[in-house]
Amino acid sequence: MNKRIILLLAVVLLILGGVFVYRHNNKSTASPSSTASPGAVSGTVLEPTPTPTPYLLPEDLSSIQDPTNTVPVDTIPKSITALVNRNYLLPSNYIPSDLKEPKVRFSFNYKSDKRKLRKEAAHALEKMFQAAEKKKIILYGVSGYRSYARQKQIYNRNVSLYGKKSTDTVSAMPGSSEHQTGLTIDISSRSVSFLLDKNFGKTKEGKWVAKNAHKYGYIVRYPEGKSKITGYRYEPWHIRYVGKDMATYLYKHKLTLEEYYGVSCNKDEKDMGIDVEDSEKVKYDSIKPKRKSKAASGSAISEKRRNQ
Image (tube, rainbow, N blue to C red; front, top):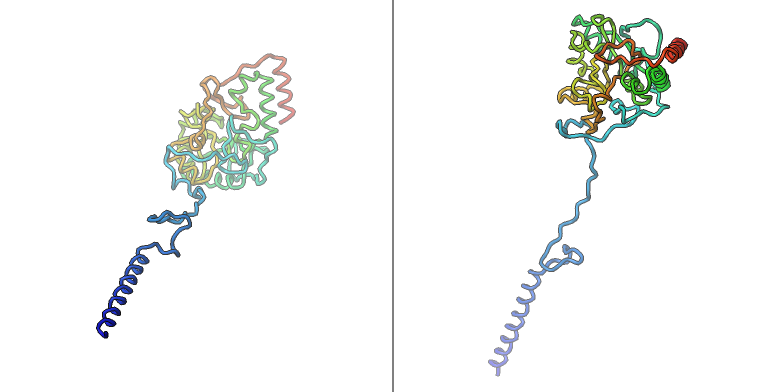
């Protein structure tokens, strides 16, 4: 009797031990409920979804650029890197708030707004002229800031003298002139009789400017061979302040502002012109528009004298 009871107890313990082992094995192979994702399919593990990071341009654009890349076009009027040309115009009411006269030589001795530049550009011009003088390069300012109203006056006067088609070869339409930014100035030298002369680029003064202007934040805005892109003929006298970093980048990669921003004026050769205040003081191949008529010329000249 005792042997039967002992045998029965042994069988019961053996069965209970088997059940325990079975349950333990099933628990260890199942996915823990604390780490399973809601709705997860058995046998898969879902990675947590990362929070998307907004795309931001770095402050130093050169860190992500090569000559084939471009950046969004800067059309903010007061920005020192704003693009202004025949296609990107400034508003008629834009007037820089920090205009001042740089302490440099000018080709004229009377007071005029065209002696002014924005403060940052004026200080940079002073440094550039001083550095040039140390190399016995004497530069002169010819025409700096030009308001929208003044540009409109010049353009309309030229239209009355030469007609619109001819005027577009020597004058920018109101709003399309960089001079309105207060960041641009035409310069010259005694070697070209203080004129805005294409040959300025061949003088020692012009060569020095082309090679060194970027060190002071300036670029030759309308370089040779890029007329179809900029919409203007080669102007070795027309320099534009864009800041040292931008100027150095453009100089190093031989780019215009249009190419930097990935745009082009796509102008035909016959439609290209120059942007000057007084076409009579420009020396350029074939850029001398013919006057319309004596009557129209006399009226326009009288208007010019009244406005001087």
